[in-house]
Image (cartoon, rainbow, N blue to C red; front, side):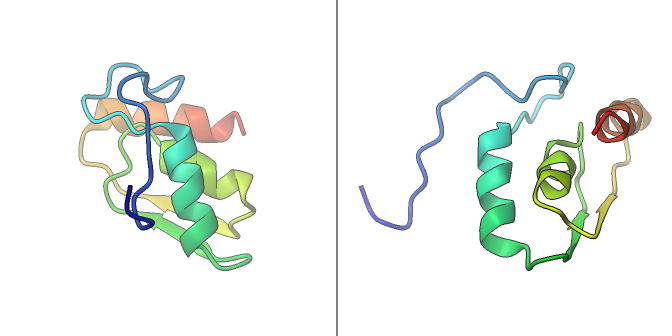
Amino acid sequence: MPPNCLVVPKGGGSPGSEGHPAVTPLALCDWWVRYLLPPSGVLLSPFAGSGTELIAGLEHRASRVIGIEREEKYVEIARRRVECR
């Protein structure tokens, strides 16, 4: 396998994603955040979905997380998941 590939098991989205059609495992978001977010950085997720990337940002001490999502039902799911952190 090329060294620039990340193996992510198929299926089994993030707990709490509540049926979002584009589930992303928390482990993958965690990897992205550790790789890209500077210490105390601000995480902007322009397609926040159910908030998994926002949760990863909070777990890695982002100074702020900002999510943008056009579907109201997913905004509410993301808000609820982030507030639980």
